Image (cartoon, rainbow, N blue to C red; front, top):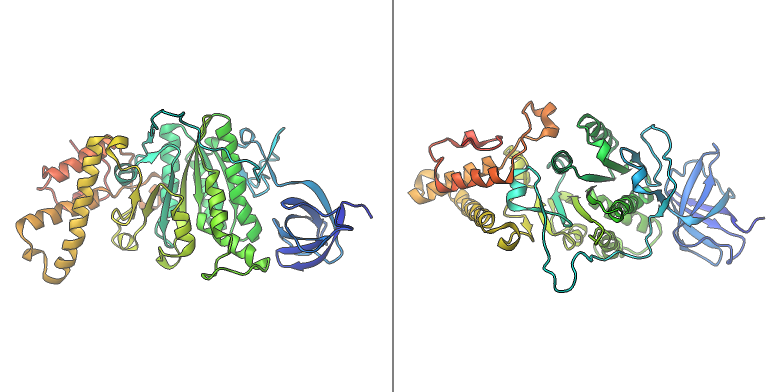
Length: 461
């Protein structure tokens, strides 16, 4: 028997134990080994750990249906690799970097390992130089006003089911690719097949595909495929960055990455932490986010949707992801129920870039005034619900009405949902957003009813 040929000794769903002839012949950690099922279809296995001297435990990256004991397994002597990013524009790929868009194979000369041995550190500024922040305009009023989109930053969109995380990400992709001519890598981790299909055709319809690369580890795939799809997509983003590009890296959904890691950990028999998540949760999330960094060659700007289970922001996986984000946009179910889209709750959200040094004195002043109005409105709303608005003082009624107008003004019809809502999408420049907020705050539009501010673009001059 050849030294590099092993045999399957056990199959536990997506976990497969492979025995090699000797300790010397055993496959290395993260090495890809190949088996075939009874239909003669290839099954890709990644070595996760060594169980005994000559047995390695593998996690499947494809379906294990039809695998049998004593089936031969062949070493490839290399880890998981993906084609270099320049060959992948307009393509839809799986975790192994293979196309799933039925457009033929990817013709690439160079392949990159998804397990990078060295992390590129942020070397954007030299010693003594002042760090500069380049702000990208998104055309979404509430984001440009309160959560400025800074090149090289990490932004999280947090919310429970059906709060609009994917829609906001799709709108950001649409606006930035069209207006900023950016390059986009989209990572669909644990995407539902329906969502992935709709997203792909939305990209086609909106002419976004030519500047994008899409990687999917879909919900029906094995936990290994979902987990490794995050590494596949970040490797492609790194490849573009090292070619001198500024990359927009969209992840939907990073919680599913943590969840897939938990499933893999349970399948491998590891003892979970007190909360039920894998003991390696912090290191896995940390390793993934460390690779989203800017260098002297280019930058990676990430926007990550984070599913919040049962709307519980104290969930350990969500809290672990928090620590790596510069801006956090929390989606409110209350806002959804009132039809306020995008449903970003300004008081529960935060941004590290709200500073006069970064966004300028005028923008900073308006943003803080808006937040003050929202804070006061939140207090007054509780009083109004008990005793009625008529019992407020004149000054409090003015604040209450202006806050309602600001709340409505920061709603916006999106381009990517025009076919569902029947409303034309609006791109609103930062200048128009600030001008509109200033008019409301100064009282120049007090005579206009609050309904007129709902789902509009810019305020008329």
